[in-house]
Structures are given as C-alpha cells and as structure tokens.
Length: 140
Image (cartoon, rainbow, N blue to C red; front, side):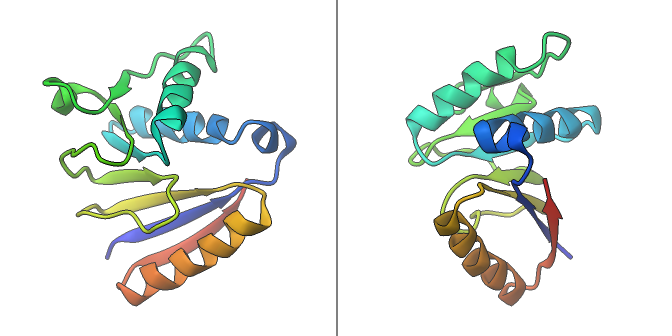
C-alpha cells in the first residue's frame, strides 16, 4: 500500500526556512539509498533548494540537480519545477499545492506553518486517503 507522510512544520528552525526540512528529508533518503524526486512549486523555489542543498550542512554532500538533464537517472535527488517531465521514483517529496502525480511508493508532504498551507494539506490528506494511501502526520 502506498504511503503519504505529512510533515507539519512547527520547530522555529524550520519555520524560518521550510526548505531546511526538505534538505533533512533528502539526507535521510540518501542514507537509505532511496533516489528522490522533489516536486517544487516554481523555478525560484527549485533554485533556492538547489542552493540550500549545497550549503545547509558543511559535512553533508547530497548529489542533486534540477531535473531535465541526460544524467537525471543517475542523480540521487532530482528537483522538478512544474512543466519539467521526469521519470517516476519510489520516493517523492511534494511541495506543491496538489497531490503528487505519478507512480510512487511513498510521498512526503512538507507543510509550512501557515493557515493556508495547513488547509491545503487537509485536502491533500483526504485525496490520498481516497486513493487508498496509508497516511500519517509528523510534527516537525
């Protein structure tokens, strides 16, 4: 059964920079040898995440790139803005307003500490449940 995990940002560290949580989740996925697709809202967010993955931890190296190159299949973390086609991966981190499209085993929904974000996450939660996903909530 596919799984959807909702990470609700609450810690001050993540409130100030929600993309730090994405970096932490990507690091955990890499440690578990899971190739990851990050669905970002727009190209600006893609570039911000790309920059942050290089600098968030001096001791961490997370192989990543913006999706759309010939070596996408060999890159551990792909960052995909809307309009960029990528192959499905087993693990997806979703930052978009809609449920993650495609075939995957697990989706991680990162939800900022904002009332509009929380309302959108409730709708996605219900949609994932309707599609037969096991869903879980984690306060971060």
